[in-house]
Length: 171
Image (cartoon, rainbow, N blue to C red):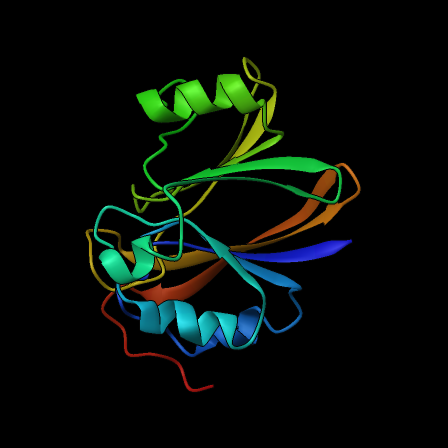
């Protein structure tokens, strides 16, 4: 069993509450737009970190994280791309990668819109954790916690960090 903390679109802002919410997680996955490597460094200082770069990320992030990440977690093949879209509206890159890699879990960020939905066409679960940072048009900062147990993805929890403009919570 692997407990995952899923985050995206921090845009160089990391609420201290993220660490509290991810305390029981085994790994943190970041779906792009870290903002700076300092954000990645803070996350990987507490848990193993997997991630992809986003459209706002500079060379520091791009040197360490790929545009597209394919890996196995327990018995689940995972594909992560920052600008990926969602079922029925995938980006061209995502559509090609989903067809090629046949993931059971497809993760994207970018839209700042939290979505968890199953894609019947490609038979995979899609997750977008929304945006945890302050930059953007989203109203509430969000992230997701879930469990991969063998081939099962379960115990999915949506966590609201508060309004986009709110001050960070004390740790």
